[in-house]
Image (cartoon, rainbow, N blue to C red; front, side, top):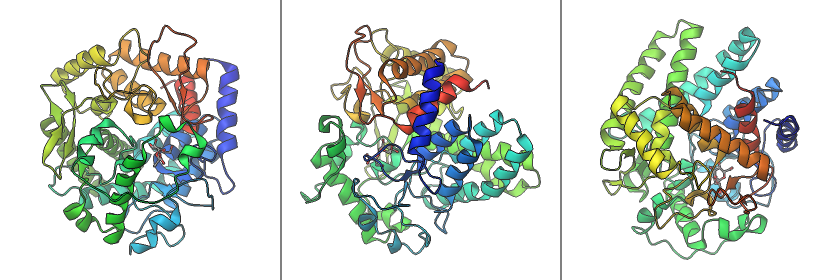
Length: 438
Ligand code: 2M8
C-alpha cells in the first residue's frame, strides 16, 4: 500500500467526477455514467468523500424507469466520443423509461444492495448513513422485484440477460457460440472506442454487428421484456450477474432488518434468495468442470466454459462445503499459477484465451475484488490474499488501467497496461483494497 498512490487514486476519482455529481469510468472512451461502475466508484468515494458517494448513487436511481429497471448508461450530458449514444438507444420507445434522463435500454449487474451495505460497514456516522439508506433502499428493492418478476421466466430465482453488454463482460469467449447462431447484417456505423485505445484490445467489427443487432431487436419490441424473452437470440443466465443480484438481495435483507418494520419485503427477498441459491447450485454448477457455468436459455444448453465468473457464486455464499472445496481446486489449477497474475478473466488453458483482449483474458480489478470477498468469506485466505496482492502490485507497478495482461508474471518489464488509463473503478477499488478494515 502506497500513500502516494492512495492520493493518486483519489485524484482520478475527483477528476472523473463531473458537474452534476456523477463519475465517468474514464475520459473519452466512456464519457457518461455507467451503472455498475458507479457502484464501485461509490465504494471508493466512501473512503474520503461520503457526500460524493451518496450523490453518485442518487444519480443512478434518479434515472430509474417506472417498472424498476435501471439502465446501464445514463446520458447526463452530450458527448460525441462514444457509440452507441442516446439517439441510437431511443429509450423513449419504452413506456416505462425515465422522463428526466436519456438512457440506454439494457441493464448491468445490480450492485447497489451490497454497495450500500459495504459502505455502511465503514462509515463512522452510522445513523446518518442509515438515513441515506432509508431514502434509497425501496428503489433498490424495486429493481430486484423488476428482475424477479420480469426476467425470471421459469421462476427459478435467477434473472436472464438479453445482451452481452448486460453481463459487463462484453466480448468474453462465452458468447462466441451464441454469435454462431446469428447472422446480423454488416452494419454501417462509426465506432468511437477504437479512436481512444488500441483496437487490437477491443471487440471486432463483426462482434459489434451482433451487439447492434440485439439492440435493434429490443428496440423493435419497444424494450418490452416479454417480447424480448420470446424472440431475442441471446437469452442467458449468467452466474456473475446472478451472484451479484443474490449478494445484493442478502444485503437488502440485512439492511431492512436494521431499519425494522419491513417483514413483507424481507419475506419476499428471502424466498427469492433461497430459490436463486438452489438454482445456482442445481442448474449452473457443473460437476464435470468443477465450476459454475452459464446457461443459454434460448438454445437450452449449458455453455461449458470456465471464466473468472465461474467462481463468483462464492460472493453470494451459494456453494456448500463440497462445492466450495472443488471451486478452490479448479481455481488453483487454472487461475492461480505462479507464472500469471491472478485472476485472468478467462480460462488460460483455452485456445480462446487472449491476455490483452478486453474480457477474453486480462485481469480486471472489479472481478478480483468480488472474488477476493468470495474466497475470503469461505476462509480460503491463500487465494483471497493473492487476489488482493496481485491487484495492488499490478496497479502500483503499471498504473490505474482498465485491465491488465496477466501472462509471464516474472517478466517485470512486460507491457501489461491495457485499455484506458485513469480508470475509475480501478482507482476506487484500489482504495477499498488498501483502506477497508472490515
Ligand atoms: C465496457 O462496456 C461498454 C458497454 O457497456 C463498452 O465497451 O462500450 C465493459 O467493460 C463494462 O463492464 C463497463 O461497465 C463499461 C464502462 O466501464 O465498459
